[in-house]
Image 1 (cartoon, rainbow, N blue to C red):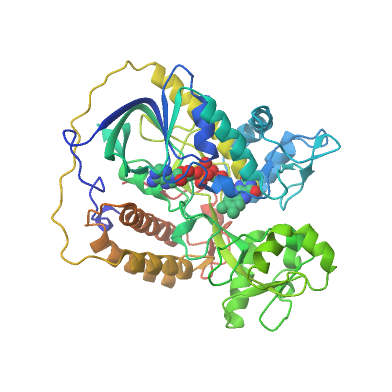
Image 2: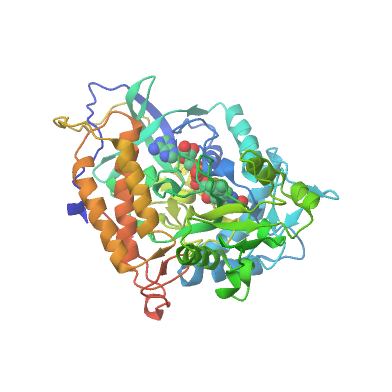
Length: 535
Ligand SMILES: Cc1cc2nc3c(=O)[nH]c(=O)nc-3n(C[C@H](O)[C@H](O)[C@H](O)COP(=O)(O)OP(=O)(O)OC[C@H]3O[C@@H](n4cnc5c(N)ncnc54)[C@H](O)[C@@H]3O)c2cc1C
């Protein structure tokens, strides 16, 4: 693969004599749930620096709606949560990892409560709801449909109260610093000190997802998959990148943010109709609107093609109007801004990239293949989700793996003596390109290409077309050295898109979220095959 990536080992030039230095025992990249949970798991006698690209609350974690899954009711069992997770993930889950996460999960959720997270209750007990694929009511939620906001409020408050943890907001991680194959910290940039070399005894990457490489996504702007490209350049193994989960119903109104329209709306009886007002899901699956996410997403795409229309619609006009507005106040408010009354008007929706199952390979403790580097949360591929994520298992993974990686990094850092010396690592300056590039044009073209050719459905022809475009754009974008995040993000997005397209081409079967229209069946030979990349 490396011939396809003319980029140097590091994105920008640097020299230890020219940049400021900072020393920490443990460096954590990302302030989502995985990163902040990891920070709290580090021994308080060690110094922790959390760096995050924008404000502390800008993350997928803060956007999480439905809830967090865990066995919290006496009617439920670990065995059933384990079985449900394996069923959703197909043959690619790691059963030991699944068992460990569902077993450790309930205590981790109780810890969130101790730290002040207030889950919704019913008669004094946590009000558990049931989501698709779960055999029990086991999803704890908060503020109705703003679970992430409440959990992150509590966790952030706790982190800010701990003296050993420092948080640098608006600080972009460019690259991991490696020496003789070991991670020694990271090169970061912010507008206050410019480029800075952070030397850390141990580093935890918790930089979240990659939805922004697709034109349609539920993910916030920060989710450009930087951590995956950063880890790849540093020599870490990545796996299962072809598995991207698409949420079937994302609001599609020009000029609005792409808000996720909760699955519960279909659970409560909303119909999916095409531009002619025809209910179409029964053409594709007997479970109609309640079929699994990947089935609903690919059916919507087919119907959009058949009806030659850029979206389909959610229709609630057959339900009781006042009840609809009270049951879904957030969606009603968002749509009202665009003149739509959800009780009467059809809501335009289409699928959007939602969650990345693939990522940096980590072991049961969150250790990556690069010594000194740990990973937690959506940036990793731990073996929990396999080819398809069970709803509400990702916040759970973030706390269980955040805790494990934090403890592991803490124990490893304790064994290393303080040494306030910089290593002689550097990267030369390249000659500047003559013509400035229109980065936003390339970025938008890439997002559209990924959506069209490597989105909800894929085939060999489209994937090969995508690969050639990405190779062409990479050939001039990756040879540049940019001096602000828009260039670095684009370089990371190109690197990662190429890997996703390559993985999707190699997996010539349909499995979980990876739908190949030219190979519509599962291939039993590929049952436990993981597609891995190492630079
Ligand atoms: C709309 C929406 C609804 C969801 N609902 C649910 C739900 O109900 N239940 C559930 O279990 N899951 C849900 N998910 C998924 C879940 O929110 C995420 O998988 C999970 O929160 C990931 O946590 P994380 O800590 O790994 O990453 P994030 O929370 O995404 O945090 C990543 C952090 O890394 C930072 N970062 C990224 N790149 C860099 C860089 N170059 N330098 C420095 N910092 C960087 C980001 O700014 C951010 O702070 C939802 C996701 C979305 C988008």
